[in-house]
Length: 266
Ligand SMILES: C[S@@+](CC[C@H](N)C(=O)[O-])C[C@H]1O[C@@H](n2cnc3c(N)ncnc32)[C@H](O)[C@@H]1O
Image 1 (cartoon, protein in one colour):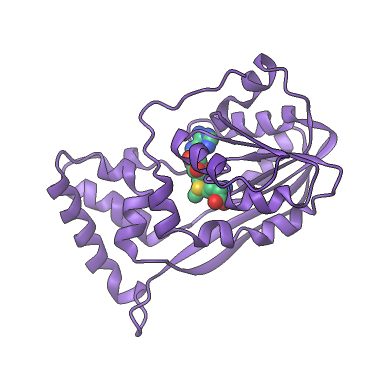
Image 2 (cartoon, protein in one colour):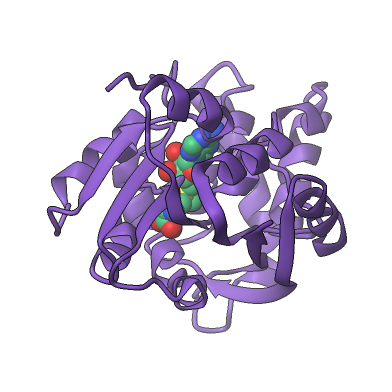
């Protein structure tokens, strides 16, 4: 099978598992909204290092996990728990050509947790891809960052680059749509939306904001030339956020806003 290889993989499965184990753990709500059935074949878009995909695989007949990061897919293969699961390095924005070139049969459902907001270049292409991947009457159950997600950290990263004479917003890798906008996109591309909500979720970090930025803020960090510059920017942001985001006992939180949607292919 032909896979797409991401140039310059900036994801680290080790960093992800150390600093963000809460991401797959908190994916259990959208997993239960998917309501996978034992006979179903399901596509997991942006499956990451495969923890949640293992849970999904225990509930259905077959799972195909795709992710643009070879490091994540390697880890997912290493921790795979069930024989009914296969993984491929595929850009979620290129699902139609992947399906056609590899003659992939259609799926009963598409699942995705905490991944679609990373596909900023072509969000509508992702929706078209999910639509094409489904059988008629098939469903999607997806959760990802919505409007205002991680707002203070996002703004702090942009402003830190602005202060250094760069166009900070141009380095943002994220697409955080409102429920209104995403409903419109889903309907435009042939989905009947059953449910769509924006859910604010104060989220306790495994480590701290520095670890969060090292794991997820790589496009901003890589705008700077040296490791010293990057560490300086991280420390600046940590001190900026400490008054609001660090609890009395030292634990760090970030305000996530999740967009959860279930929709049927019409
Ligand atoms: C926060 S992780 C979530 C992983 C997993 N779904 C989970 O719940 O643990 C986001 C994932 O999106 C993947 N990703 C980012 N851009 C992508 C793209 N264009 N196509 C496919 N996957 C992408 C990353 O490689 C990463 O594994």
